[in-house]
Amino acid sequence: MNNIAINNTIRFIALLFLQVLVFNHMNIFGNINPMIYIVWVFLFPVRKKRGLFLILSFFLGISIDFFSDSGGINAFAITFIAYLRLPILIAILRKSDFDYAQFNLRTISTNKAFLFIVTLTFIHHFIVFSLEYFSFNAILSIISNTILTSIFTILISTLGIVLFTKKNR
Picture 1 (cartoon, rainbow, N blue to C red):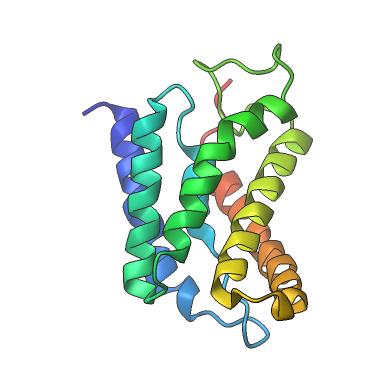
Picture 2: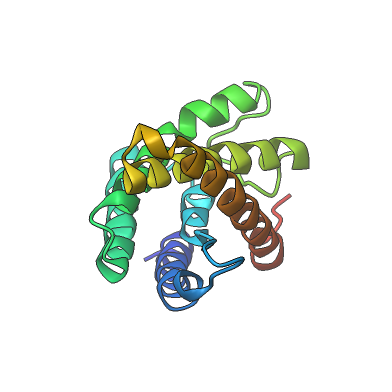
């Protein structure tokens, strides 16, 4: 196994256990649980095979669902954002900025990286809360939970990315 595979395996396991053991039990303001496991999607290398990436994302989500007893909601949401990651990257970055072989979230501009993280986080959380409530009558709860949980997830995720990833030049 090469260094990239080892790093991704360690990140997968660490984020799974952090989410299940720490963040699922953290109730900020009574009902906000940051979902930091989606950082794995942000940091997975773009140049790897997309099919493998989608399968691994599904396994991460289904593992979270297994420990959280949430019935596949997280598996669907993380697989969906994993599928949308490349088109969103292409939309945010210009073709001249986007190099598959050298892509690293820490090497692009801070504004573009933040926009990428915010976009995928809001999509993920909207899907999770929409499937959790599964009612048009709860649209205000869905939107408020999406916004509040996204804010805390983005803050913790950004801090973790800055502190625990290398900035390649």
